[in-house]
Length: 122
Image (cartoon, rainbow, N blue to C red):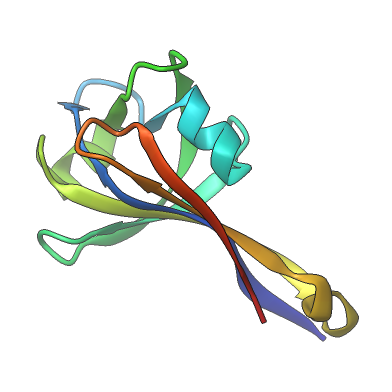
């Protein structure tokens, strides 16, 4: 059996831009994506702490060090500039892989700069 587990989390990143006219996705500063192990085009779950919205979309990389977190296309209807988001990367794992699972947790400051990196184990 495979279990769907959290691989990583970007904790309380702040939306810096929304653009409804883009074809869709979430833009994530490349430094943040790298720290969380999120690849370009990888599907992520986005949770908006301000309004309770939850949605899946794919990641596109924003310039490294920019602090940009951008909601594009339909995702732009799910939040506003200044909203705090949790971005989850998930994966399917076999039972025997779970004992070695270490989820990355990346916390940021008010400018979306990495404040703390942690791991959480089962």
